[in-house]
Image (cartoon, rainbow, N blue to C red; front, side, top):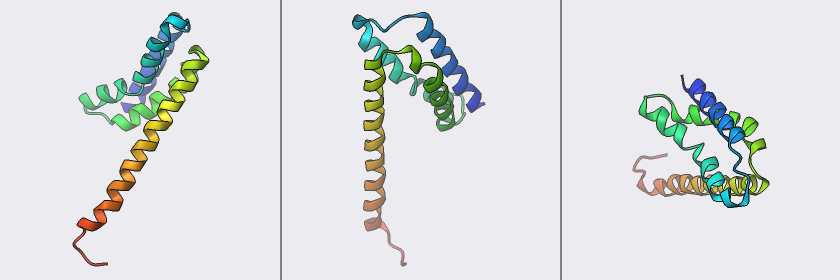
Length: 110
């Protein structure tokens, strides 16, 4: 269920980006916004129908990387990669802060 939904969403996005040329300078923000939303919309849809959102965005990411990225401008590709790296770094930092600070709330013994 989840892998199929992710791949279908990636293939549908590839068709949209192939059919509609958003690489012009006046559409750069729209292109970047749609490119970034490709990772959040499948997660929300999968969670709403009780499928695994993580697995869905994994397979959506695979298909988007393979089929959508060649149809976006270089500026959008670089900006998207930078934003995804920033979000990954912030998420990793939050996880390590949570794990590190949780040691103070631990009441058991080692």
